[in-house]
Image 1 (cartoon, rainbow, N blue to C red):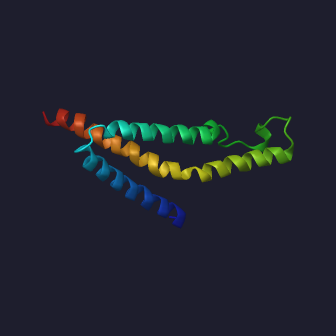
Image 2: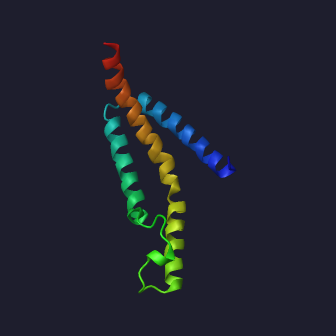
Image 3: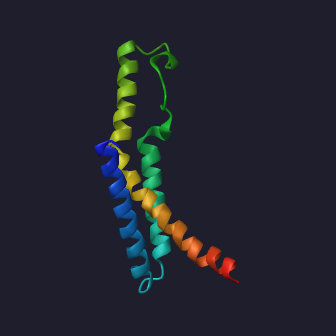
Length: 117
């Protein structure tokens, strides 16, 4: 495993553990924490999609771009897309743990009681 991938995995695991712990600790004194997590998660997801321009350029080659663009513009567009994905990767390190936290809470509230009864 590449060191960069390993460090992202460690950040994901640490963020997941931290956000799940924080969620259940804060939920005892602030009952609206699910709404906060939903709002923050939704905001981060919107930011990620808008910043990456709807993720429309994945796998695009210069031949796929319009003929009205010069070769330099095509290369610049592809490089800009790759740079945007790289710059916004930090969002996923927060968004995935938030989604995981809400999934764990849903399982604890709904699925486990259904299986037990």
